[in-house]
Image 1 (cartoon, rainbow, N blue to C red):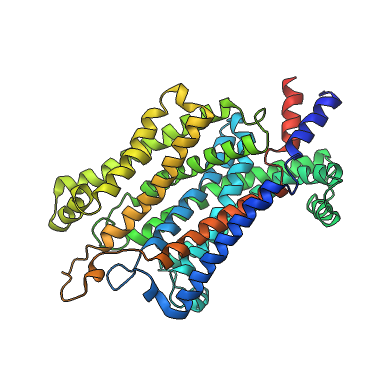
Image 2: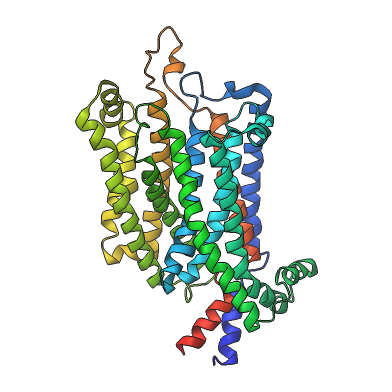
Amino acid sequence: MIDQSKHNKITSDLLSHIRLNYSFKLWMGLLLTLFVICIYAYITQLENGLAVTGLGDYVSWGMYISNFVFFVATSLIGMLISSVLILSGAKWAAPLARIAEIIALAFAAVAGLVIVSDMGRPERLIYVFLYGRIQSPILWDVTVVTVYVMISALLLYLPLIPDMKICYEKLDKTPKFLRNIYKILSLNWIGSVEQQSIIKKSIFILSILIIPVALAIHTVTSWLFASTSRVGWDSSIFGPYFVTGAFVSGSAAVIIAMFVYRNSYNLKEYITDLHFDKMGKLLVLVSLVYLYFNLNEYMVPGYKLKKFDAMHLNDLFSGSHAFLFWSVQLFGLIIPLILLLFKKMRKPTPMLIIALFVIFGAWFKRYIIVIPTMEHPFLPIQNVPFNFKVYTPTLTESLISLAPILLVLIIITVLSKLLPIIPVQETIEHYEETK
């Protein structure tokens, strides 16, 4: 059995960040101020329509849809870490499961709002539910996103139940209403054998269920593109291509969160160099798979080089989008992959820098998937203004695109201040087993 002093130290270490300190207030104040500015930009769009954006008759999907694909992609990390790795017996991933689930829940929950920002008449969203057709990938997308959010929320909550009891008992200096919330969420947890059995079975079932749902959420999103005959999207590999890309961006998001929590919440004893090393190796693995699909995506049409495929590839490789395309491939995928092969680069600080490049590259990769294809319709663009031919996001559009990113950061920040980032009860049990 673990001694009481060690028990108290673990509990104190993992609950010490649950307080409203000055840095938290300053950070939240900054996020909320920027978010209000972005909301004002969206109100401007509501009043004046999508004319305030760079969208038009030809490029009708822009930053908003790029944002949506990125958000759905990043949310898949919850399934990869809290389900696939845990079920496969990777015990090192256990301390990171809650971080992954918080990220997954935040990104998946906000993804639906990103779609609303792309609608000129958002009040008509209800028609998707009232008159949606089963033949439409849009209805499938709405359905799987909703189911994924629900399962992710349960996977976050169920392992929290024992910790909610600990929070209620130990955080006696927190406001009374918050302690009452902890008490309610603990569901009268006493740690009995029966309760532990129910929790473990429930988590096991949800961990299995979330795998097909998570694969479906991004596969269906890819079908929104692949079900068209547009050059650049007319591909049968878009499903696995999108899913592997999702694991890359999600892994980068977890690495960034690990670094922030480790240093801000003094969790160096619990989020160790070993975890960064393992996450670095995981990022290498998913990046190699993603690199394969990238090669396949461009090499096959490049070999056949049909007329419109040639126009699209020339634009990417040496045309107006070439700088962004090669920057994304080199700095967002290839160079990080090479660097992570060296153990010295799988340390916390180098991993943070690499992960930032990867996640920014992941967003711009979605931009590259969406925009160049929209700028190359089959029919020639004639007798229209120049701004119809080339997509340029406006300031209003950029601010609206920033809003969901800020909202995700707000959700993650709030959850991180209310919940133990590292499972307390599970950590105590781990030390008992290894002592």
